[in-house]
Amino acid sequence: MNKGKEELVMSWYEQYYDDIYRFILYMIGDRQCCEDLVHDTFLRAYTAVDGFENRSAVKTWLFSIAKYLVIDEIRKRKRKRLFSTVKLIQEIPSPFNLELHIENKEFVLQQMEKIQKLKPNYRLVITLKKIEDCTTKEIAEILDWSETKVRKTLSRALQSLKKINEVGGEIHGE
Image (tube, rainbow, N blue to C red; front, top):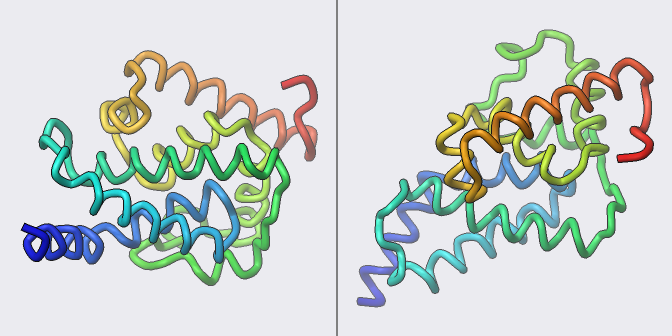
């Protein structure tokens, strides 16, 4: 079974690496840490694959694993932001095409910095919805939330991001 399990997880690795990498990179903003967390995501998937019951899509399950690792990392950092936007913009794996989403790269850099200022739950929903193009249902499965909570949190997150854009800085009191 180990050989089959290894081949299965390796096929997931090849298929979902870029998606998981991009998600973690947007959440953490640190390339080295991101690579470690992607590795840990697939390592945990390997050790837990026998318990995977196909109740959700493989991608959703992998995102759930990555989400817990990201939240743990955010807690460890206690909101220290190690974020290098110039390198980040060059290291986002394809097929993500920034020009299709936003023409102005300077604007993209500013938004990525501002997303890092949001509360972790807000970062999660914005990253999953706006960057990974997950549906509300997929986000609900990944975060183990109701779809209503996802919609409300996304709305609040976008409002917070709008406030940051309006004042050009930190959000105080959140």
